[in-house]
Image (cartoon, rainbow, N blue to C red; front, side, top):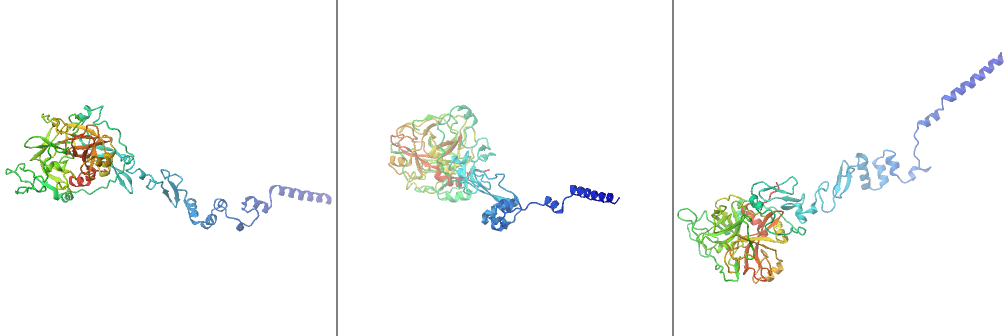
Length: 514
């Protein structure tokens, strides 16, 4: 019996040990299952091994000091730390036009390529006004902060693309009336090629235009026909007021020019030879300046707005008596029902114009009309561009358009219908070399050396206009020349670009970025 009990005890102990070993493991074994394996340096001491970014900051969360130990450079550490702590702000590629993005703490910096600016390098500064006119339809103004900014002439506004211009009024400057456009559909005023825009340099600085400034600027060369005194005009003074008529109407006055009137047989003449008759309404800014006594056109002019006309100063100082201006004129022998006549109540010569020194230097004058002009398909002003823009057009347009009722050949008869002629700009060196008289920097040459196309006697003061993107801009004023269309000679014109600020000050005509 004792043996049986002993055997049962042994079996019981063996079964208990077997059951226990099949279900449970030791504490040490159990702990090793849940414990993460610590990194090691292949058996070497960690402090003896070079720091590793993955080991320090990716496998574990690292501190600034640990990251600094990896990069051993504050700048590189900061670059890493910014993205490590708040994400990479450059991940969405916010920088444009090839710019390099630098991540910052909750921010980023775009390092722009040359010619670009703005927070995201979105402003194309390189495309300032010297490249394709800044992409502008009309004027381009350089801004150090915003880059190339487009502007529009009076009567226009910028469209949503901030580059194009759209009319705000029925008869915006430089555009033909609808009736005339339909009539001329399929052909243009001049067969000019596209203007070369690649060498353009525009420096269009805005000037504060005010009436007070205008009066001050031209005070010494203003002929006022409104607040006139009762004193007669001194024989040699051209900047005095003029005597009004006793009945208070249009004043009776005459000029006493300091230089003799140009004769038809002199070599230097009032300045269309070789041109064609214009279509009625084709040049709606053309002004006829007409002698009241003879009813003859003796000079031309250009309409700038409802109340301003621009012409040559020598036309004024050599006028042989009272005159008025007529708009919408085509055939001087007929009443075509499109004409509009206006009196002039103020004549403003350029302050530097002095006929005692030169009859043609600074040959520019502005006329103020006593009554506003009513625009129509036959009466529309030309556009006036900023200095750089106007100079660009002058130099780069294939040809410009000149018009007037002047003589059709040297010493020949005047034209009874408005004539037009296309003339190219002439290089200044060639221009000066062709003239026996001085050609100042305020003048330019246009025309042909061997082709008989030119302005002539009676065209003085008339427009020299150039077209840009279907809009016409004033680029010159017919001034003088040696005979007309003479071989080796060119027509000389007043360089309007030189007088933009003065004209703007007097008239208040400025561009708009609205």
